[in-house]
Image (cartoon, rainbow, N blue to C red; front, side, top):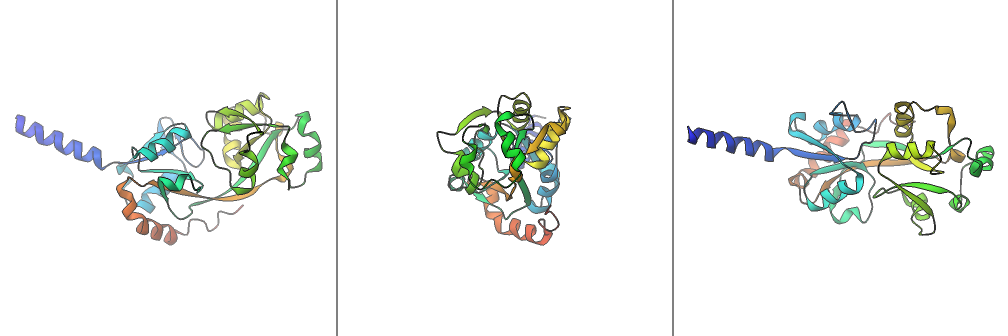
Length: 244
C-alpha cells in the first residue's frame, strides 16, 4: 500500500513540475482573471504558440514588478505581454510580436491643467509640454523610446499605482493628471468601475503603436523551444488584421 501511495505521490509531483507557469499583472482584455479563471487574448493564444494543451499552463497574477522579479529568479516560465528593453534582456528571451497595441495619454476632460492641450487637439511632439502634470506610474512598466525618455527623467512628477485598475481610479479622482494606457485596457476599467467614459479623453491624439511580445525566463526549459514557438507565431499570422 505504501509502495503504491509513493508512486502516486511521485507521479503527482512530476505532473506538478511539468506545469508551465505563466505570469502577468491583470491587463484586460489581453490577460486577466475573471471569476477566478484566467481569460483574455493571451490565454487563447498561448496553447497554440507553445504547442501544449491549456491544462499544462498555470496562471499567476501579481503586480508587474513582482512578475519581472519572479521571471528573473526563474520561478515562472513565461510573462507578458510586454515590450523589449535592454534591462529585461538580461533575464528574458523574447518571442516574436503577438499583439499590436495603441498606447495613449489619458486625462480627465475637466482637468484645468490640460484644458489648452485638449482644445488644441494635435499630436504632442514635445513631451516637455507635459512637464507640469502628475503621471500615474506602474513600477516596472516600459513606455517605448519616445515617451519613455521623457517619463523616466527624475524631475517628472510621478505617483506610484499598483496596477491599471488603480491608475484609472486615481485618474477619475484627480489624484493624477495623466495615465498612459493601451486603449482597450483603460476603456475596460472605465466600464468595470461604472465611470462616465465622456469624462475622459485622449490627450492631443497622442497615440503611438507598440508591438507586444512574450518574455521567457532564461532559467525556463521553454528557452530551447523558442525557435519552434516563433515558427508557430509566424504561421498563425497573429498581427494581421489587428491594426485599428
